[in-house]
Image (tube, rainbow, N blue to C red):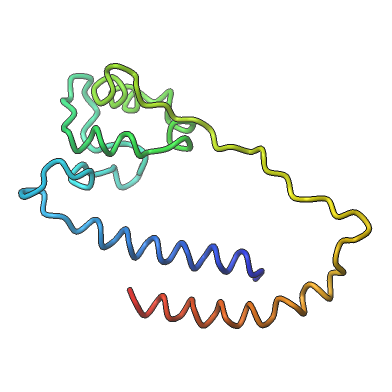
Length: 141
């Protein structure tokens, strides 16, 4: 496993731990919290209950809709439930789901690129440190 993939996995685990902590909200005390608007279990890009076109959109669902992101938009923009959500949770069509910026290009080092084996050897101490940090992060969950 490359160091970058390992770090990405570590950050994903940390994000899931944070997400699990955030999702334990008291919806009676804070009904406008976006986590009080559940997503469909089998289609996590769709808000629960938007099968009917006249489904009212709570403040929590308005907030949740804004966070769904471009991938959800791209995959579900033609779906009738997505259109119900858009019509009822964003009637002024303010929310924009833009594609991610893909302008980054890795530098071209040409003939000065580091050798593959030298690069792999220099990563090993960093990899060991990442493993230790990863398991410490898991212990925090």
